[in-house]
Image 1 (cartoon, rainbow, N blue to C red):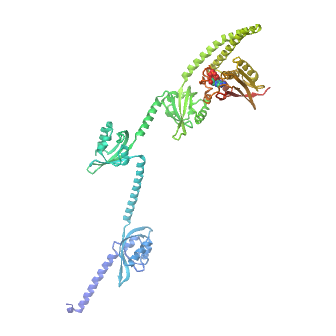
Image 2: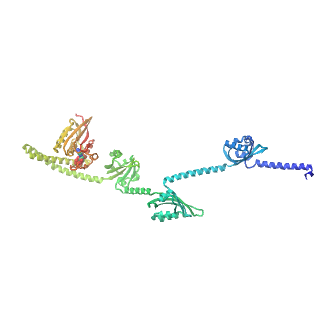
Length: 627
Ligand code: ADP
């Protein structure tokens, strides 16, 4: 056929074909140049020899900045591009090889590269690289990983929390009736860990009195019209030991698209101990609030932290008014030093009980109160505060005052006839001594001793009554100690036949004090020394001088006093009660008077003693310079 064609026609046909080819090539070139997929070619030396617009746009370069440069310039990871080029040199075809590319603006893009080499006669001509952007996909993936990581962390944390709170978890599938309990949940119900449970088992462990309403609550929670929330406190009966326990169950129901309760999951915790503690606390609070005594607690700095109803009644402040304020609000100015004193006693571990003092109300009334104070301790035993019970004893005080008045009156009435009796005895005695009838002398001497004893007793009662009334007054004068001591020793010797009384080192001492009352102190100490040394012995009434002070002591060889009793000896009406002294009579006011009289003299009575060995009572006074 061809033979027959005219050569011109043939040429024309060729030209035509070439034109068609050219136009197809142009189309192809256009297609490649303008393809939406980034494409490039790299020569055997790794230099970019061509890139389409999509690739330039993708990374943000102009053609002049990209073509002609090594491809490795545009990769973020050198080892990646080296590997790609290596593989291609070895004639591998790469499919979706992940790489990070550098953009002109400094950012990176995640891409996958597919590439193969065009060879002619075995020679490397260039690569054909297709780049596909996966930045978005990568980002999503990274976000997802971060989320999963966070979830895992949260779950781990949750697991820890659950484990440490003894929180049981449960998971109920109402449609299938399947119920799953965590180990801790089984522990709470007292069920074996290796056995499954079901709803029936659960129902059986509900306390009979709670069962009905609990089942109803469950139904309510699963009602699609509600919010699916569940939070109840109920009693169960443990499976293993049948103990009743209080538990709190919380949960949530999840509904399917067709509003069926699909899953019901939640937690359970045994709150029996908390509940008992709360009940105890509530009971205690009720007791405190109904108490007739004011009960107050405060910090170590004296800030009031609690205040019961009776405190409000007694002092007039409401809890709101006083909590947070200093306890000094309640203390009269002249007793402010009591607080540090009480605190130091408590710190030493001593108890402060029935401490009688005066407090002040909101309307400035003075109240007589008896305080009992105990430390509040933390579990380590450190004192963190104080609790104070204050009893209003104003009425009792008034009653005491009436009694005192009575005693004072009676004593006074007794004193007058007694003085008369004593005078008659003395006259008769003087007369008899001249006529020297030894029997009569003896009888009268005894009568006089008894009358003196009674006088001293009445004297003590009168002093006590005056003291209680706050009517005691000191008549101070300067006087020599020694003559007073001789008088007292002389009087005391009437009381005994088997004791020796010695005065020791008390000459030339001048003091400024109430002579009668110091005499009363010495007589009390001396008669005690005699009374509590039933087997006799030597009693020393002596002085020790140091600088301008004198310490006056009375020392005996009698029954002595145990350490416990020594602390309380000076309390009003306190008497030691043991086998050795129970037959010795007394009222327990002598040493109280001694300590009070000395307190008025700004001095203090002290004792040193050993049981069975003897006792030494002593006190200090200021010495005066002779004029
Ligand atoms: P009374 O002697 O009337 O009981 P006091 O107040 O004088 O009261 O003494 C209180 C207690 O102290 C006494 O009951 C006694 O047990 C004890 N006591 C006082 N002085 C001595 C002493 N010298 N030796 C031993 N015990 C003493």
